[in-house]
Image (cartoon, rainbow, N blue to C red; front, side, top):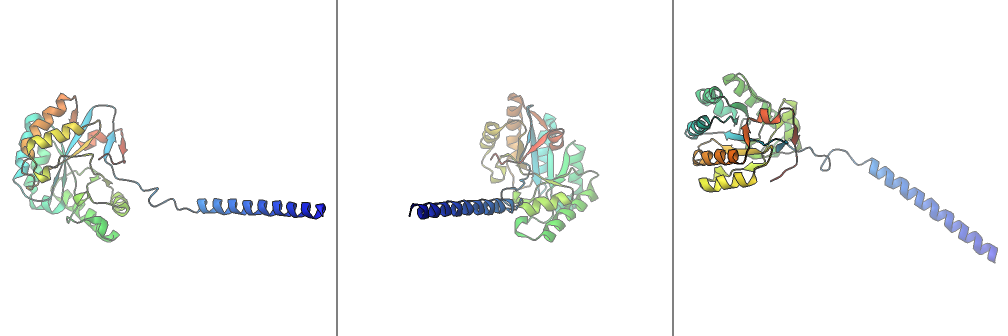
Length: 250
């Protein structure tokens, strides 16, 4: 009887060992077949630049109007501050003299796309056409476009990022939103930007006519950043020889 019981126990141990081995093998196969693309591997756009030096960048989106821009350029010129302007293709072709005023003032031009669409809601061909058409339009009115793309409304997904990169553009969002598009008052915008500033920050402003107060806030923003020892540079200067940061700090 004891021999029978021992044999049964031995068989149970062998069976348990086999089940454990099979389980480990299945688990290993499951881990190895998890796709490397998707949520866990998603590459985000650029939100800021990893910098040890105290540098930040002012960026201005423009998609319509022509009244705010001259006011913005006047302030930037008076403080001798360079900036990066993200222009929509249709606006640029409609206002070539304004584009020239931007570049003549020492600022750089980047792409804000063509039609003002939430591109994450559209198929690849529409995204590709949006980026490519804007590129052609911008080059028709200016000699140089820096390789940065800010999608309309800051709306993006993996497809938008990948398609823009195929067209030679890196997708850039922002680290600090001045909220000038809400017209909350100059003092509010100044405090918001200065309280959130950090090395390598990309600051979002607008020079479209929907931003009616940004020119009033800019002097305080510029003076405040300089008081905090920040140097204000273009996006190309900020990104030169530095690593882009793709974690959203907002």
